[in-house]
Image (cartoon, rainbow, N blue to C red; front, side, top):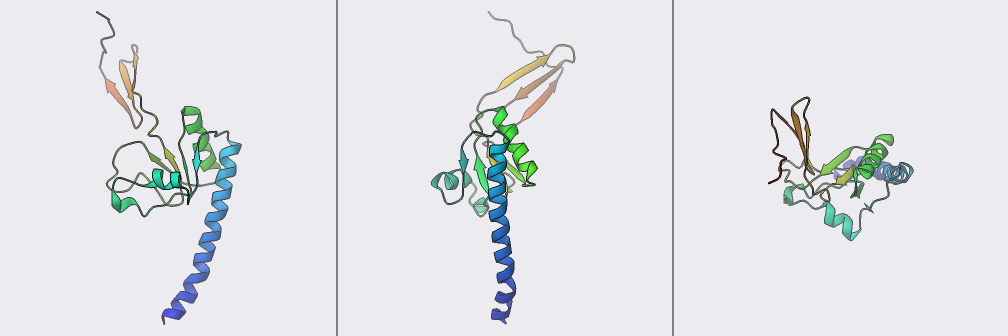
Length: 151
């Protein structure tokens, strides 16, 4: 019985491995085609393992196809376009803890945004809306007037 089950699963495993290898090559080519110039980490490299590992040990069974660490907004956009063009799912990490392991996905392009470490405050005086952007979120705060006067 076990031998029969193994013979049924083996062709399926080989097809999955070939499919992932094709996705890997297509994604890598797409990153270059879309102008991504930042670091790219592939499986089996020390850097890949370093950026793949999560603080929550239960999440360490997840393996993206590639990991990128964009340095600016242009590289983030290029990575998103690249993944979309080859139909590869995105996963994004920005510094917080994901207790349900939703910050990393198998067979995805994993975008590590922890290098985005600044906070910016934008205020539109006409709409009375202030946007607070951080490396991980954009928060809209209504009816908030920042004090921009200097002493």
